[in-house]
Image 1 (cartoon, rainbow, N blue to C red):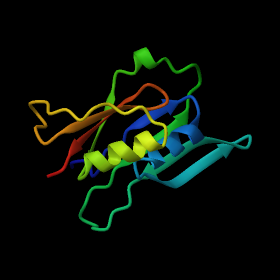
Image 2 (image 1 turned 90 degrees about the horizontal axis):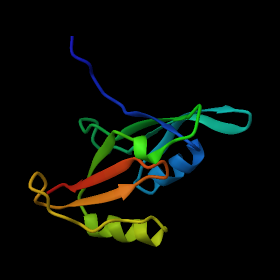
Image 3 (image 1 turned 60 degrees about the vertical axis):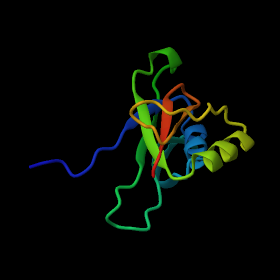
Length: 127
C-alpha cells in the first residue's frame, strides 16, 4: 500500500517564531502542543479551497539542543502563482528575500528564502 501523504518535520529553536514566519507564507496553525506555557510542537498547513489539492504541510518541534544553520541539510520547496507579490510582502515584513531567478529546472522563476533556523525555502512559480 502506498503512503497517502508526506509532511516535513523540522526541529526549530523557537516554535512560535517559526509558526509566525511560515504564517507569512500563508500557512495556518492547525494543531499545537504547549509545555510550560510555550509552544513545543505545531502543525501548520496552507488553506485549500479545492479538496483535491495537496496542501502545504509542516510540523515544527522544539529542538532539544542548539539549531546550527550550517547543518540544515534539507530544504523546503513550495509553489506560488505570484512571486513578485510574495517577494514584496515578505520584504515589507522584514524577511530577507532573494532575487527571482530562472534556474534550468524552474524557468518560470524561483525565489529563495532562509527561515529563522537556517532552513532554505525555495518558492517556484506556478504557471
